[in-house]
Image (cartoon, rainbow, N blue to C red; front, side):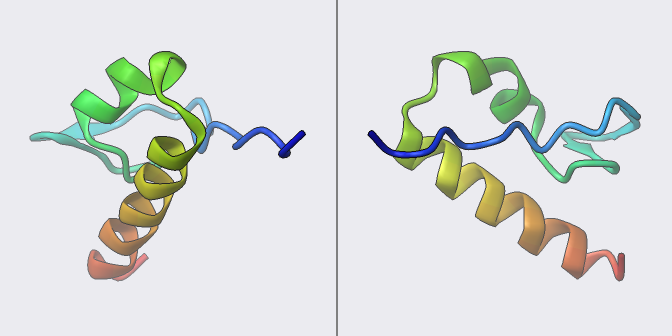
Length: 57
């Protein structure tokens, strides 16, 4: 069985518009996280990482 994808939340929620400035996920990704399948979670984590890098973090 594949290893579960860890939730990128660091419990420092700081939303700016549609994005959490702490974990990089969108509001929709945060809302849907528990229902997402593994490939969706992997994609969300990748997008979140790219968003944070784009902010200079």
